Length: 124
Image (cartoon, rainbow, N blue to C red; front, top):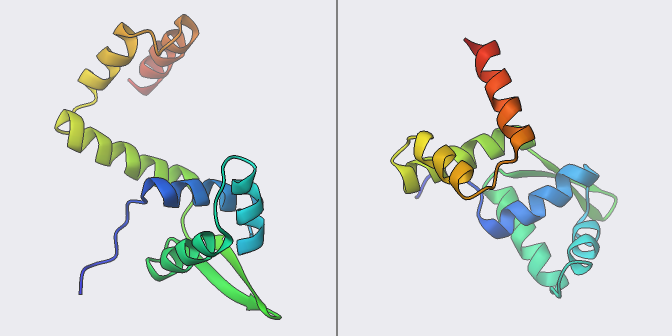
């Protein structure tokens, strides 16, 4: 049996964002939130959330006759894992080329750059 994946997929991340915001959340809660953004079937959300519980991204408990879901890990931990995975896949684990790309292509504002410099100095 394959080990449970720790990195969430794009679809799972979309659901995780809703669960983190609402915590706890039912399938209906998540479905209604996603429906505001795009057309999606209730059964698709239900299936994805069950899979995410099986993969231990979500924890579920039965409340009367409805499953209530909560995230098993905090948002910052998931983001850290996604960034690390991205860095490894795209930049061979190095953050420098990513930062250079962001600065060169003006994804980082002057304010952001100043904050980065300040954080770098504090870290040293």
